[in-house]
Image (cartoon, rainbow, N blue to C red; front, side):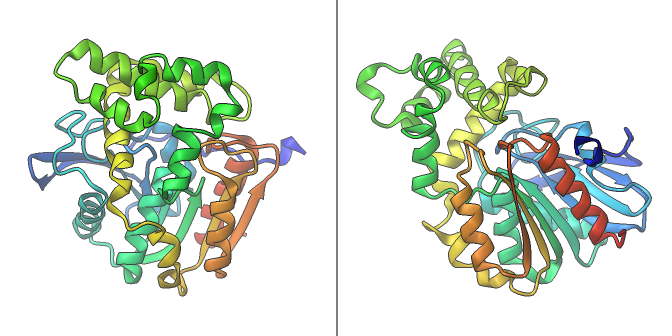
Length: 319
């Protein structure tokens, strides 16, 4: 059966790249991949603060798609690095609109996984007329329950060894609110304190997103430069609940009613409990829902990747 799983398209280089000044001192790096004039799409990476990778270019048939990929504020090749000022969900939603206008697209397919699914939902609910289709993986809506499950009690029970390493930088007296305790260290004036906290925060995620250990996936989470942007920005967004009302993205799912979509979620996704994907599926019946057995959170897991590739092919008109 595994031989029937779809895999990524061949490696490809962008046909256009640039930096877009989005104001507030931020400049975001973007790439355009595929065939100019093809089906418009935008890729929203996870984290927040994760940046995109060259492999993400390969989720779309390059003969059929015209895809914008970009590093969200403060991460990847965007500048300034690891910056928290003027960096919120709604700044990013506005940036997506700026990129769409820059590319000259009337509407586009929006593809997002993990935090990218959060951002895709926020964007699509604010600008439904600009979204032709949604492809979402690893659904996350930033409710208090979801955040507590991953950063306070829940996943800690599944990964006690990794959890011990996660809480090690935090004194016992501060462990009743680990997100805030980490914020204190990630924004400390001492660079060493920031980096130590960033690596611990980042590795916790890198080592719990796949069903089985995948060093090729998790190793980059321990690299100082990546970890600093990833941990600082992610913690910043999560401490603030994404600047969303509690439960907002499920509450406003009715705004997606006319948008075709595909939801792909791993049964054993640790960061993002499957219940949330199930609730979104019920609130947005037009979307096709795939709950993948034997899979965790990462897009690279075979059953998840297979469904994502089939979704982008389907929306480009391939059978």
